[in-house]
Length: 622
Ligand code: LR7
Ligand code: MN
Image (tube, rainbow, N blue to C red; front, side):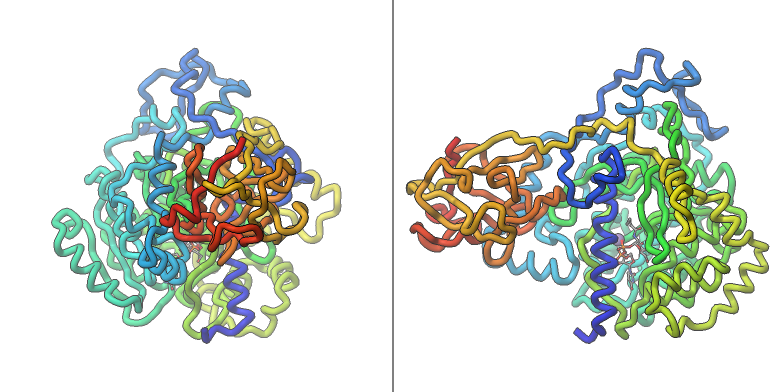
């Protein structure tokens, strides 16, 4: 790879952080206090389904945030502070029955051909291509909106949107699912067009296959325009290129690996209609990169740290204290970047994007600062939900090996942050002396738009942001200003065990046990004569982890699984079986099963294709 090392490590770090940050945030936000917020803490989740409607005791006030939006039912009590109510609204929706099992089977590597597709897919796309290939372009996903959202009726008179999707080397079926989810779930009167911008992809046949697909499908052809840049521009200039061709009154930017949910577009367009300087962000649900399961995200907002990395953050205390707060726009200091809706002329008037930014990174904070500082506002819209494939790493880099995120962030700092840029420079000493190009055009824009300064932004938009200059007292107060999850239903911190058993190779008397002490991270697993001992006793959790002696989790690896600290993020620690004897034990992330080469004492447990019954069938000895 001709990436220079720091850059390569940089993007790996940034993208790993990125991909898991929402998930971690989700985990973290379940914990009651900051002290216990270790990323891999063992907090158990209880995600009950949304109750059908226990809200009908006249308990809730209906939302009425937009003049034009009418609610089916009249207003009830104005102030409700019922913990129960809040819990019900904040609870994560349940996946449809059978959903899990279907996806599990889809991921199973059955042949060497499957294995190849899966491994190459991972290299190029960093998600499970084998599963995505098998899913329908029109698959159903759980409707993750809360019940109040379902009662909001939006004005029919909304601006139509041009949807802008740029992509570089996207996996074709995943991109087609993105497009079909939009066509299937967007009333046609609100969809002006979908503009796809191929950012000079060099994946064999991608462009021609996509062109062919569009031309062969009438409905798609009628709605979709495919453009291609003349060289690799990066997502910032590629989006500008697409937006300049758009004709809709509104623009909606989306990533190329998403699925929009029921009723996603109306709340976004209604928000823009209220005021052309409103910028609206949907709640970004999680499409798991290993399994493509779709799960709901909690209501959180966008922030950043002084390394100028975007992060998810708890809402200010009291933001969700009444029922109507669950349908109201939630003020957000920043956006994640990939998914947002904005009036098209306002996008232009506000200076589009900074065209001096390359490939990936930083543009999301730049546009967030610009929106707030130059007279607009930015909100997350709880009733609009769009799923996004969160990857564990970014599978591409800058063609010249530059750290584009760092360079782009430097531009942000120099144009928008005034003296506060020093905090960034202290945080990133490696930015010193880096050539960030010419920013005079952007500084002139800031002057022309008569924007507030960064100090105003911090004080009025993001007063909860910790400053390096804050003393302990101030930091404490800022922390206290954010919600501490007191209403969340997931208080219990113990792991939930649902079963316990030894894993015995079928037709033998050999069981899986740790090679080393059960406390040793990294220990491999081997076959030994079955003995009712701690080092052979597997505890299964409600998250499908296998925890040996209630200590370490079984984690898939190549070629062998091993014991590791439980990270609660599924994937390589998520194991499926039939719950009865003669079952394969299948790992979600690997797509392969527990097996051995030979059924003899001392044989090391390996990850094997799931198809050889004599060497990968297990009995669960309870
Ligand atoms: O050179 C490129 N050219 C492109 O067209 C590089 C990327 N792209 C495309 C790419 O195919 C994809 O459709 O641009 C889109 C975004 O790239 P991703 O998916 O690799 O980015 P990401 O999802 O890891 O990163 C987030 O931050 C980026 C910062 O530049 C962008 O703002 C992304 O849009 C943004 N994604 C989201 O906000 C989705 C939710 C993630 C969260 C939290
Ligand atoms: Mn993305």
